[in-house]
Length: 202
Image 1 (cartoon, rainbow, N blue to C red):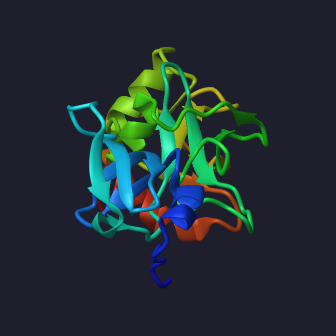
Image 2: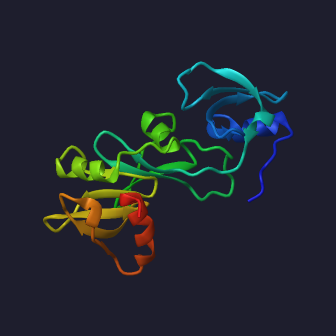
């Protein structure tokens, strides 16, 4: 996909204000406003300093970036873009949603929340820790990477696996997950290798 350029400040303002975009170094920024001169008022979304700073449009890359699972205090939700023809280039609360696992339900979204920041930073608990969270009852579901999450299974002694909010398989609860046997649903067997990579680095 070719990169989009904004040569006019007024056009950039209509497309970028109140959105998240990346700079050319890969850092994520929340854009407050863009002046006609091209000056951008923004804040480093994942940095320690939350004070607004001024940057130039030329500092930013406008290539789309990957979203994925978010973890809140007791569940996981899949954060994804909406398919819209007229959309802002950056990600915001309007053109992206949170999907609950196994349903078509959407949830309220705050793109500047800590759980969304952790998604952008690719910060997740390990597969083993996610399983422990669910089995202990601390969480209904827990994501261990941008694409996959685990939740309690319908069958006793099993955990369900979700891929981008869709149930794709299950596995038996074990004390040692190094020899995990993944039972994938029909039609999604192709996901098994990717899942194994995230589970235990195979």
